[in-house]
Length: 122
Image 1 (cartoon, one colour):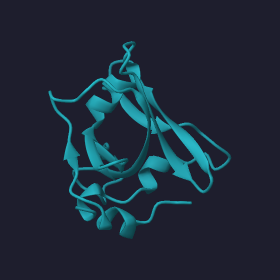
Image 2: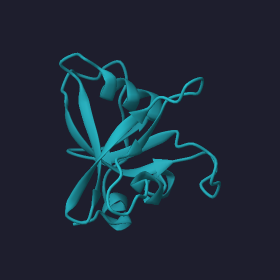
Image 3: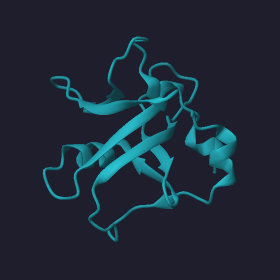
Image 4: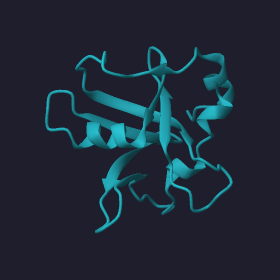
């Protein structure tokens, strides 16, 4: 079942993870994104958000760090597309900053870009 914007709006304010974050590891669904200019086709995603016991929002740099971590707190992220989960992975282009995107499926679309803006759900 796809997450609807109304479901996110009905939740509580985003929890900001910081230095107090506990080691947890796990797999988390990304349900919204933030770009500096949501209408721009060239701006990169700066933050992603989702929900579990609380709504959360993380910088892309923090998501990359968590995906690439080799520690016990290594985490995986995905985007739900219908009944499927499409994995999020890190792209490391030579000479450019790392970024995240979804694995290709039969649609060949980056499903992150189709998510609502996190600022619209706060």
